[in-house]
Image 1 (tube, each protein chain N blue to C red):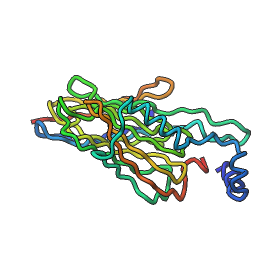
Image 2: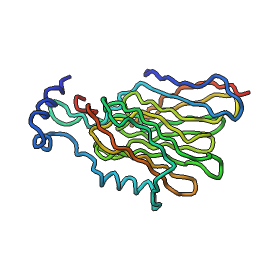
Image 3: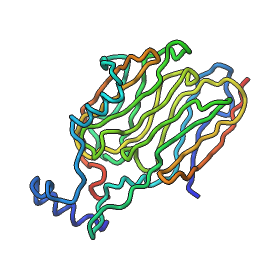
Image 4: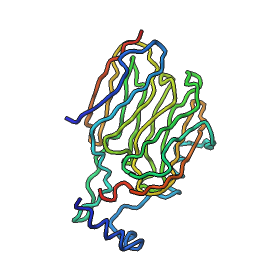
Length: 149
Length: 106
């Protein structure tokens, strides 16, 4: 609650004050791309096989329900090894990395994430054969996380 | 001690894929929250989640500050043998919180 005053001042003062305020730098789409490139490890992410289920209109950025499902038989020979979530406008591009294997039976994860702004969220999945598949979702955040602490 | 809630079906058929849910009480302090006198509240988050079952770590997650407070993680698991699932959360300082739940596989 002690943070209410600065946040209101920021809102009123607009963009210039925001830039000068003692807030950490935001991630950029470039930082997100770099993080995704590092995850892909040389593979070119392809669209498909990954389903990212996240609300397109977020009222509360502090806890955004997020589900990722990947089309995979999850056998010893052919399964999802890792699922990663990235964002473009939080202070850091990484959200989470999930490590899976054939014993999961299905490539499905559900969590709740923080989003500091209206932005695009990306889900990437790496398969055992090294191929990387991707999906993304653009969403609008009306009450961003972290503004009032 | 923080509260942890895990949801594991008590019984499953061998080979059945079941849903596992885990939530633990934690602020997930991002390190990006400004203090009134300047500077930021120091970061303290759970950075790792693991689930062991039937002799191996079957699911794990690396968490970042963008994971909500009181982290909730759900995933699927193939029931292979009766036994215990061990859930582990590890914070930035290496402190470990563990929770266990039994599953009976017929």
